[in-house]
Length: 492
Image 1 (cartoon, rainbow, N blue to C red):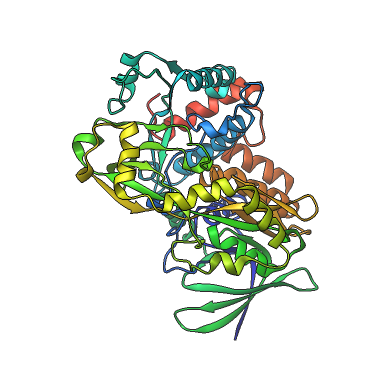
Image 2 (cartoon, one colour):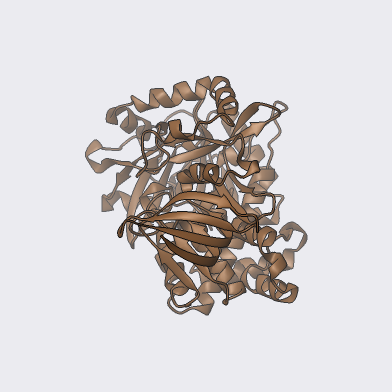
């Protein structure tokens, strides 16, 4: 067995691990960082372009970020939080584009308007309240609302406005389409130039254990050479998408007790017909159906992947036992243990409607899915649309009270008590807020080893609005947003 020592180990070659590595490299280039990935190349699971919606999640169009309560008041707290965090991502990408000539922002980000669509009096009332509440924040300056069918037809030519149903939309001009796969490879190109960074693909994690000196032993299997490697690391970050729950369980840290995963499968209808792609230049989000998970809110999106336009409609969510596209149908079963069985049982019993919905969706035919598309785009022709498998999403089941559990739709970081191990669980907004999430990891786990002046100076350059309330700092907001939009190629 080969024995090696590492300072920082990132497990999983997706957007999160790569972002963490790049941030650390910028803050302290002398840091020794090693990344291990099970597949033959990076960014091939949740980060792969076809496996996610490619939406720069900022709260402009995602209606599930602004729930309405029993008193008919719209809560905008989550939308504001996600918007502030996405702003940090934009600032860091802009920083990289200015600093490195070979970091090409055009390869991964395109300005695409974000639109919310609703029908019916009750839903229009909700959308208007949402618009009015969000418009009070400087973050949502420029958000537009309309019930006028002529205006809506201009905003979204493919959407049906001919029916007698009342219809309303909000539109934000500076939304974005993101190719996180390309972004990951853009950052990797820069990472490779530093001799203190290394990456090992086709390496599978077999065990993770903490030693008495608080360092970590990681037993790794080299799939290509079939040899075992024992890596000793001072800090571990687990960012392995759906596989994170299994790896977290291998670590045996106290704080992972009770955590489990609720896997959801996804599919897209994809159209590459140029006569349609040139007519639709937006991402249009609707409301999730009754009993449907928030992540299944239907949306019709323009995607730009490798410079080519296509339309995506979906996602069509269904139940699965796999945690990854390249995973096993035993993933869910293998994740169940004595520590999380009660949280899992409570979540499944208290979400039978959701489970029933997902199982039922699994039986929907291609024709059923085309009919769902036609609720958005009535003139859709079957031959223009191909059904494609999307990525898996493992929603968080977390401990609640003594032996119970609850289902979380979001992103969460789980730490060891001494913060020498951090693991990221969950899904949306995920990749969109990756920079904020990874700065949080660095701040909690590694900031104590960074000179305070260096930390302050680096953050001000890389992400000036990190942990700032931009509603209270309009000058900072205007300067930062104009700078990022200009650098990233948005039409100001």
